[in-house]
Length: 230
Ligand code: DC
Image (cartoon, rainbow, N blue to C red; front, side, top):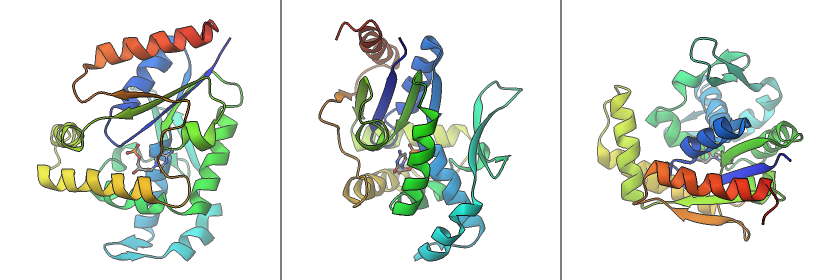
């Protein structure tokens, strides 16, 4: 039996790392929903609809039907990449600039309903691991396994900071920490689908856990669900 696995939690808690590991191990599809919100954010930036202290929400909503988000496998790396109107934007969506606007874009109900609908279609056949903020609460409220990941803001900022440095970005740790804290605030206080732990989600705090241990804990939970042991 195939199941649906929903992984939610704060930014930079390693959701995508564990979600990918699980999907690989189980032979399931992995969907990074944050990448979908990031691709729409990139669209808004490119069209001049969002900038520091400015957001033309109405124009974005008007143009939503001109935006297609999809995933395509990169034949060289074998990894799925998010595409905006057919073109891979994977390389451009992880910058601090996109990160600084994405939470605002994710407050727009019309954006959310467009993406949620698409995500639900992707999960119709089960056998999917999806990570995001509202997967266990809104997208798949009946998912067999729901994980809610947390870690201290400082630890998360440290991880993100090193990731950005490795990619060659020149950023200050303080700016990354400020961005993490600002996103936590917007994500948890927005009106539409705020980040909250679903009642039946299992909370995992990985401030001090190593990635391998965490993976094995979650994999065991998944195996139990698949075998209907729980
Ligand atoms: O997971 P991430 O950091 O790539 O997500 C980017 C932003 O998108 C995050 O700040 C909140 C938003 N998001 C959301 O609101 N709902 C989701 N299912 C996924 C992401």
